[in-house]
Image (tube, rainbow, N blue to C red; front, side, top):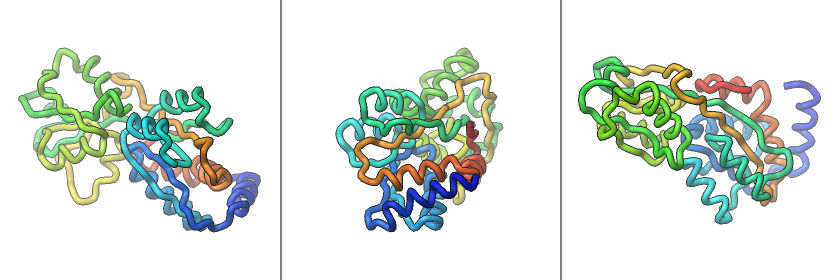
Length: 245
């Protein structure tokens, strides 16, 4: 982080001190594990705690429209942050790309991941494409490169990518399409195969973050944004398999 950024960072945090109420961050399920690591680093650096609320991007977007008291929104797409900005819910100038997500196949089957996807009659879990951007990316891949190869009757829809991983590790689906971060975060399970999808078969998931205009902790929210886009924050995000811009 540059010296100027550090100076600004310190001024912003000092403005609100160590307030009792944590900063409330709505985070897309695919990014939950990374957000936990970032929140811990931020708290250790500034003394400001972060409370995370995770779910599908579409579900969190709906909650924000209905008045949920979030300070920051880490979406898994660019569409919902743009809609919130157009509707006047976003602090001016705060909408920024923080990560670029990639899709991967994961399976507990002894077969190769792509063989498990293309062969047999085992179920394929993907996130609901109507509310989860990674589900939309998965459907794009299945509708494109794999259109003639995958039986649609095999699809089972999860609420978000976290639930997709749950379906796979519990045996309720033979293969799942998840974000690479889901695989990086696995601790208790060892998938038989993982395979990152070629990026030419789907659109990368560009993820944007916004500070919500209703926040009462603008200085701390801005400081968190500075941290998110600092060298330290970007390195952490990349360590979990995301791209940064």
